[in-house]
Amino acid sequence: MPFPSPPRGVKAIPWRLPIYLYKVGFGWLLGDRFLLLRHVGRNSGKTRFAVLEIIHCLPDRGYYYVVSGFGTRSHWYQNIRQQSNVEIQVGNKRFAAQAQQLSPSEGAEILLAYAQENPGSLKALSKLLGYEIEFSPEGIREFGLKIPVIRFSTVQSTPKE
Image 1 (spheres, one colour):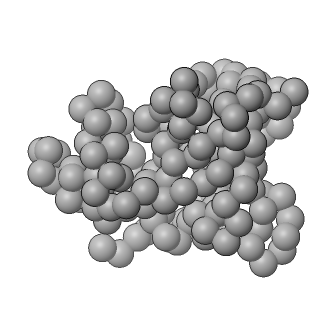
Image 2 (cartoon, rainbow, N blue to C red):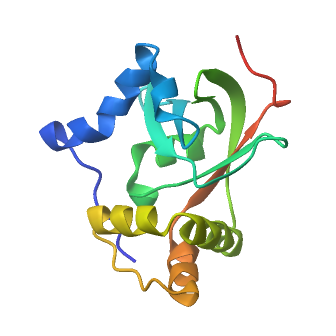
């Protein structure tokens, strides 16, 4: 499955705006459905940021799951594959975390659960990104087998102050 290219230039502005909400202390406005990912650029070594939708979470275990909407072409995805030690912020709580890509079958099940809980969100995002998905359990599982699903495991589930 070909992944769409991440937006560049002016087209990237709407995708980057939520980062600034977090940077000025208003990340909590996005609630607990989004997280700010702080990671290291694989080439530059500089700190980079991305805001990602949480598709599933197990807060008692310190697990937060996200999808790479642009697949393996996302810069944040490529960066965490190189350096999996990251920091995430959910609301106003920050955590050190370890990023791990799920197996395709695990990812497919997580995405199916997300689609059942948030059918409108998956439909809107897939349309925005240009994916053609059959919105049946089988079609969603098939899509989930192809798109990267990442689990962020917080270190000791202890918030950083």
